[in-house]
Amino acid sequence: MPYLLHHLVQESAQLTPDAPALLWKDQVLEYAGLWERISDSAAGLQDLGLQRNQRVAVYLPKQFETVEFLFAAVAANGVFVPVNPVLKSEQVQHILNDCEVTILVTSRSRLESLTDILRNCPALQHLVLVDDPPQDPGTDLPLHAADALRSTGRRPSGARIDADMAAILYTSGSTGGPKGVVLSHANMLAGAQSVSSYLHNTADDRLLGVLPLSFDYGLSQLTTAFLVGASVVLMDYLLPRDVIRAVVRHRVTGLAAVPSLWNQLASLEWPEEAAGCLRYLTNSGGAMPSSTTRALRTSLPNTAVYLMYGLTEAFRSTYLEPGQLDTRPDSMGKAIPNAHIMVVRPDGTECDVDEVGELVHRGALVSLGYWNNPEKTAHHFRPAPGLPAGLVNPEIAVWSGDQVRRDAEGYLYFVGRRDEMIKTSGYRVSPTEIEEVVLQLAEVEQAVALGVPHPSLGQGIVLVAEAGCSQDEILAHCRRHLPLYMLPGHLDLRAELPRNANGKIDRVALSRQHQTRFLD
Image 1 (spheres, rainbow, N blue to C red):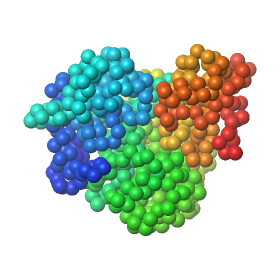
Image 2 (cartoon, rainbow, N blue to C red):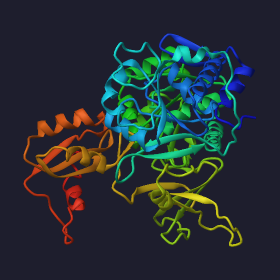
Image 3 (cartoon, helix red, strand yellow):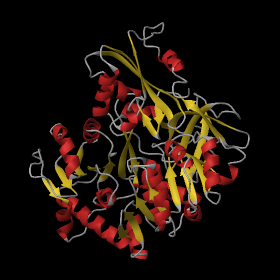
Image 4 (cartoon, helix red, strand yellow):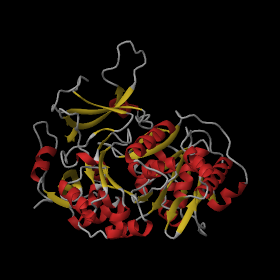
């Protein structure tokens, strides 16, 4: 029975060595080959001096090497840090420094975009490139080719237990830069076991991985598949229609996406071949509109639709059984297997039926907290409510910040957030991250980023600013320094921003003024 994350691949390599583990473009990598690459690269990372619990960041699009080095890091007794490939150099620098990454795995082209920030990453000791190194790397850090790293001919050494760290996933908080959620081997295995059990995954499944592997929902496609010996098609799509083509081409049985992508896919024609092979689809990262669900079910009548809710701090919390869609299409369902979901008041007491309270998640999926951030960890990770009084060391639960209600039959419904986080295209975006970039412009005096309803993205981003420059100048600056999903969809430039009685910018008033901005 696997108890460490990389055991998932190792066990499948022993049981079904010739079964396909990963498909990418026109290439197939079987489980035996994937495990050999993971083992060789793990030994190579140890040869570079990687120590127990040190962090290895992987900054690549989805390809074989991305998966290889994520799992090699944990097989080498380290911790992997997947970096979203759409992030700009400033966000990459924050991640590398925040968790003191020792080894960065990337490509030649991405290295060229990072040369200006690498000198500001004092903990970084080695760079591993998955392709040929450039003539002039622009850095004094040692460069290593991935091929050479695999040629040691030995196996990695060391011992770990399931309580050890396995990964740090970065997610936006309501203030400041992204924070790192620390996941143990036990967290990730518990998540794979729970999700694969209610999705009924088997070795016959073929999952299409279109979500970023830096996103816990995207990473889940790997762990659930590897647990049962299924295969994953790695894909960075350009157009939604490409996703449907990939489903047909690879006979995909399981597809996970966020509402913004489902909204686009629902409007397209699904050929009979797709309807014949797609066993299930899942949604998370925001509520899927009922109209989108109906359209997908019409196009895919034999495909089970699972509506899910999760948070990086606990991986996945709830799901709605497909048979309940007609009865309660706006519900986020009930707790996933091996999770206890509570709805509580501020004092920790359980809410009554239909009373709105905060969702609290307890169980094996609750992460180890935020990396190097005791204040935020103490705020969101607290003793679970309702435990026996005689328990000396209380179990820690995660307090989500999401407001929900529970009906008389135990089904949960999302109501809203307690903070100002923006949920767009499946991403959680901190208003502060956008505001700090905009305020780099000397001509901008004040800036407020807001999330308001959007018909396809969940929330669209509105930027309101006091500025002495044009909208085009602000947008050009944002494009240089922010990933695409953080770009404002509307700019509102003013001579002065409204303020409340305390003299603070009145975000509530601004949000109210823009509530229908993307709906008109």
